[in-house]
Length: 300
Image (cartoon, rainbow, N blue to C red):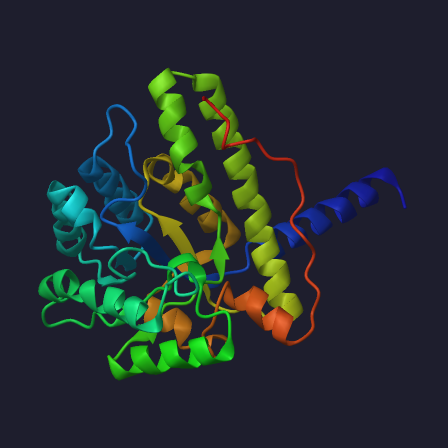
């Protein structure tokens, strides 16, 4: 093959690979821990400013709906953060239940205690979702019961209260950066902040590729995706870049109900739907690779 033909051949391969990489797929965006993710905020940030950034960025990327899952206990700690819930609704985005205190089902002392925490989270959501369906539930830590009795009991309880479970297929683990980001901003350590951002964005790229590959491996097709993110300061400053990467990968934003209408979401459970289904089918997925910063000790 002569040089010109070889160049043409390689060019066609590149175009084909690029087209395949950007094959369109549906994805719903969900945001956990409204109105307040994380404890102390970085200097200059407020709960309202974080919410404003989220809403502005989501709108700019044409996201039609972003379900916000609420831990109402935050309102007792930071009463003014109730404005975040009102801003979310004014933007046309719905609210769902994430329990009152982010109580992990598997860590709850009793089933009754967990059920009480679910119920305690309802009034503030129902008030702001009057006339709309707010009966979506997101398990804290994606823990839907570590044994059959607990799983079935929790599902029966949620069904009895009219809930649908908000599943997850992909997450970029943005929550891991929340506390370290606050510490680094407080110290003015821009070098560490840039290192965090670079690592996070590489993780986003890697996870988008994994999401596509694993969907094909487990289902033989690209299922609609449900992204889990958190309403934190670090998540806010990186959200635009995250959505740009999803846009470039072929994302078409849909509602949670549209995504979960796919048969892949027929049986909810713990963890992510792809990982859970792979385990059930005996499919071995490759482990994530790459060195990571020690976020727990960064900027101490």
